Amino acid sequence: MANSGSTAGSTDAVILVGGQGTRLRPLTLSAPKPMLPTAGLPFLQHLLARIADAGITHVVLGTSYKAEVFEEHFGDGSELGLELEYVTETEPLGTGGGIRNVLPKLRADTVMVFNGDVLGGTDLGGVLETHHASGADVTLHLVRVSDPRAFGCVPTDENGRVTAFLEKTQDPPTDQINAGCYVFRREYIEKIPAGRAVSVERETFPSLLAEGAHIQGHVDTSYWRDMGTPEDFVRGSADLVRGIAPSPALPGQRGESLVHPGAGVAPGALLIGGTVVGRGAEVGAGARLDGAILFDGARVEAGATVERSIIGFGARIGPRALVRDAVIGDGANVGARCELLRGARIWPGVDIPDGGIRFSTDV
Image 1 (tube, one colour):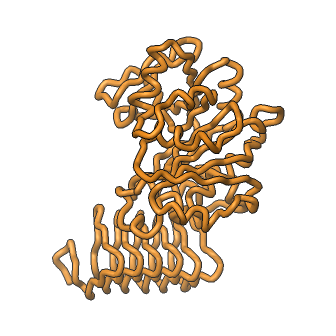
Image 2: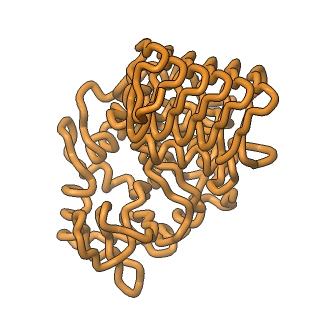
């Protein structure tokens, strides 16, 4: 992956991590989304490792919600071989405004911007190469998806130049979508209006196109997932555990589960589907975990089933309970034989008595 030559070394990285993560509540009440454990590491660490792997060393984080948590964890970045700096938005500025807001910290003429919600596998050196080889003012990483209707589409011409930015549509003319990774020539960041909210997708890019700026697309079919919803978060984490999504931050074997040191898994428990068991977590005899994420200190008692769900820090799932496609907040207690299905969310510290919530009629 490492990109020799001057391109990566003379590139700054910017990661936008200001979002409130509302779709992942209640987990994001206590931690910002990029800090949630994903395959046992803060989600952001996977992206930072990819940036370091590409030979980029100077990274500026644009923070807002729970801004202090990032610096407390990553510090100056030296442990990751990076030089990290932090800029906090006092009011929400959108993607364009967030990029403009970090301008005082930027040093390089080439700036690579990342959306901190995306789990990706593209070759960052390849994106930079496209940018420099094409002589573009701005380059967008575009990823091809099987169903582009849920995303904004970005068509390109035969030379790879972007021709339009289309909002979500039921009949998209292309399967190329904006993957949330951009390369800017610094002067184009300077052109973004300061001190107000700006959307790059709706304002900056369309106006640059209208001015005749050269916007290039780098199109690939690399791994890509927006981690905004519980369903995507669970799948992304499982893909990391199973080796479907690449991450230089995860050395060693990939497999059906990842059990951290200090966790206790009783005999006869079944862990499949890219399940993660956090530090100090406990899994009882006969429990079945399929695509489950147990944060540190969580407990799943004997005979319980947890499928495609996130169990927050120190939460407990009682014996023979069923938790499927659900999010259980930190410290919550789900009693024996409870059934939580289809998007259920239990807020932190809530106590559900044995058999207190059921979907089926038998007890």
